Image 1: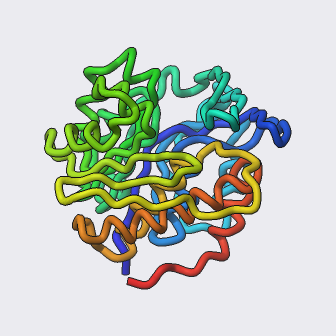
Image 2: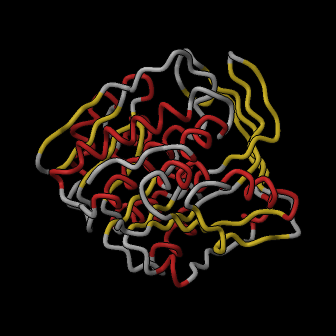
Length: 294
């Protein structure tokens, strides 16, 4: 057995440019990347919004994976669309813009099975939407993510999300924006957040340098899982969160001693996300993945 997982976040179509090429109308969204990774380990209930034009894409993407989409609301408004160009030198999104689509008016409504899930992840989206999702959940283990843009513009709401989460997933620049400390001081930044509200740990995402989990009990660092070539880093952070929380759900553990093993699984999922454009490789490897042992 395993704990059920719920995820509330974006479901969108992506136009992506990297030094390796350009692709349009790829299935994307924080909730989708997370769900694909987490479903390797446990059942996932996806909550979000999609235009009628994007519904078939979502269905095809999760086909063969243990993901239910009854919590995905279908709108007559065209699906959210994200346009991005990735910089492989600085490993950042160099340019981006978003057409909000249904997310301009959507309010999260978690079905009963999602409300009762033991694990909840709220992907990066407007923090007021994250709060709405959080406050409908009965989860014992809650993870959340954010973006520098939201931290700068809606800092009070972002901090409220942090304090209602057990585990926070941020990169070093996002962590610096949230705490006001330099990005080089990411350990101090993460430790400063632990203990606020229910927050117990911060997973600090470092891109090609790997990731670390910081808690009151110490710091565990792991190198990035090796890949032959990075084609598209979109969704890597959400896949990492999916692997991390999915491993916790599979083992039915949320204690600090298990977080190093969970981080290893998260990095494996992140590596699978970046070796093809969009969700292709993550989807393929998830549909054939062997569950990790307890």
